[in-house]
Length: 542
Image (cartoon, rainbow, N blue to C red; front, side):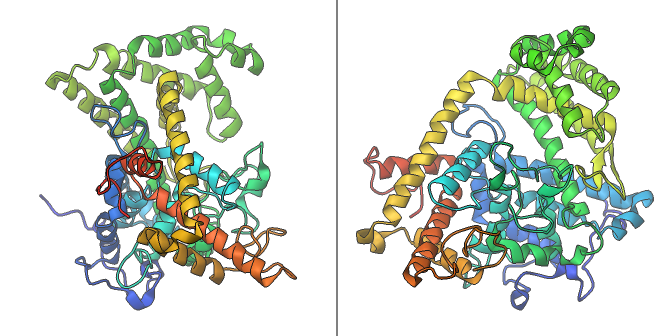
């Protein structure tokens, strides 16, 4: 294989480069590091982590153990994001039109992008996004953790804290550039930076608060309060170069690659499984094309009331794009995207049902490769992006095409009653598992028999919470970052200690559950509820 062009080849950064600064400088090099480039070493640290290996057992959309067919899991998804992200980074850095701007914006290294892409889903809990929502709810409402749970923040917590490496729990000790590139949402839930991005109009993508509960803070965020200092250090090399709430260039590439991989491989998966049928997809797209003018005359309420009728759902998407992303939404580009997806998907891939043949696999491979090349080739860099976009973004036509592809997945897969039935059971399982572990952790007669990993996580959380008392705490929330009794003037000392312990126990339980695979979560609950008669098992690690 020919060596990479000089413009795309990563080089060891100069001494003193803040981008290469590690969180724990005293341990700048680990005994297991084999690569000379610190960013390549980061990539190696991530792929050798057990948190990375467990992603093979974590849901992307369908649980790996429940589909019966080969579908993407979080591990294969992460590998594809890394593949796409690196291709984008190499293409942009090799283009003289972009090179100077990339340097001005803080730099772009393909190794950094690849490492961040491989790490971006480390924190995804059992059952994917469903598990994320469940753990956030139980963390806030049952365990009293105002920071709740967020998959991106959990990924950042893993690489900076809970992953064990060496003699202490200090995370993977990654460089600042890679940690910053992991931050799709470079803010905490409510307090950092100030003014908080949720107050911007419009707010950056993900920063807006939930309309039904604005006090909770941003819907998406990149770090818990306990990791706020680590976030600041990661972002320090980019201070004064990009806004505090903006993604780094490398984070922007990773985020765009994530969107591309997600949009394409979910279509692959559900064509293989037989869920994505030509008839319903064709009915939705073609009906909208034929009736677009009439549909635009309907009120939002009328469209919502008849959402089950063909054409209505994609009309809702068109209106949603104008509301949320008026900076790029275009009716002309939207119509062109619907037509392109119809030709490629309805009249192309879905024309012949998947039968497992070589011909069927070649059809999927050709479809995926063609779309990936089209989207990667449509990515550019801008010096002054809109608030809801990063510095690296898709061209208008391809941005709309991605939205339509993702719509097909949401409308014809995620909205299915059979998937909803399955997910409701998974949601109950996770909530029950958290309750069962909480009862165990808080049982005074069982402290000596707790799983060692869970015991260690409680101690780690206690130390972290004690160290961050009073920092990044919103008014009226108490002294435990994000809330609690610690540090409240006049509060009894015993009450303050009890508040810290309770918060540490809650965070440890969430860390523990989030580190399980789908199968481990099922097996652990079976044991805790007495439904499993097997004493010694490798289904989960105690």
